[in-house]
Image (cartoon, rainbow, N blue to C red; front, side, top):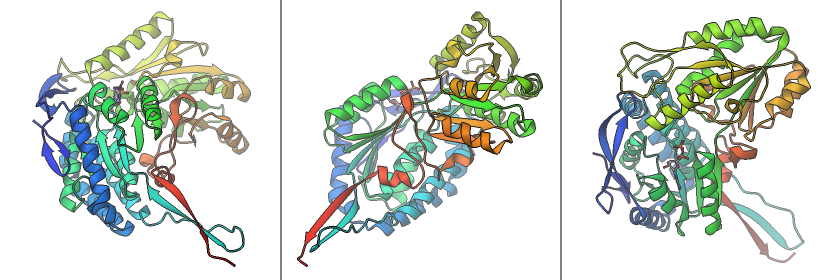
Length: 478
Ligand code: ADP
């Protein structure tokens, strides 16, 4: 039995309704969360507005930074507790959950340091004028968070918003929101004023929709599916507010004949199996040059076959997927791949002894002859990798970009010119050369092009996204 946090208070939903929370490892209900709705969202938005006009709006930038730093430390002081909560809620291996909590802490730390460092300009203008720009908070920021990395996504979205002096209303995912509720309690304990950070739990189509359409918000940050992203952008249009959308991907590795196999293989396997493939940036397509195809495929298959899905306590490669719907979806894609005649090159395994009702899927490595399968177009959000051969650099670039998405990519080659050419040609918000994903990437501007969305999170640029510029023109005479 959990409660929401609105205006500094732990409360139930106004309608007293609750939602069951299922442990993906066991398939069993283990607790409930309030089923918040429009009334709760309205209270939260009003509380946030009140905070902006009251205590929170008066906190100077460096003090906001200090509060965020205190929260960063509190998160690490509670790392094990939070990791246990996250692992039970999402099914991820405990070491992954611990790392996610460390990255959450890092977000608060990074933006604590940035809170008082986004300076305005003075702009040369007409004689007799002085012009300055000031970064101001947007106001009430809405944050709709997905279930794959609840703690990390919360930090990524909310930390820069609070650093810039916004008041946040967060709608975490109904499938996994418990770590976020606990961190919001810690925020109150370290001294964030009531209303600066509000959490409304509930369903996407109820609490989420109400939040995204609320006339009292000034900004929406959304990470989730493409379909819902379109709804969010429409809702943002209703109130003419800005939104940042991160809508997933179909990221490609491009592996050339001169690849360092020992470096690439573990990174590529990890890049699709980590978090059971439920990562927007998962490297789910592998374009492999023909000269190295057999050698690389052998090493890849050997590594892939070692992957194991297990319970959080077993702490293996990955855990279950989040819910039954997702399990069925991933299995449907695997079945579809077989029907289409893709070759299963390797499979990981579900560890013995996992609960029979858990949402476990088998990591699967496919080989396709051409870049044509549905598995190469759709975001599966599961541990499924498809390999496609290519001959020339030009062909590789064309295939890498043959997707509606554009979130991330990687190029694996020792040739410096080729590294740069391919990286520059890939239609993606982030491209890695001889690596893939790194340490949470808190410092690195992140976001998509094409259907992966727009706007940038992470890095210093998020402070600009979370604020607006006022230009002050002062005519004082020459
Ligand atoms: P998935 O399909 O992977 O669960 P979603 O895009 O549905 O991803 O969910 C991401 C977040 O968006 C969750 O917090 C969810 O509750 C929320 N959400 C889902 N539908 C809506 C909606 N119609 N309006 C606003 N938020 C929504």
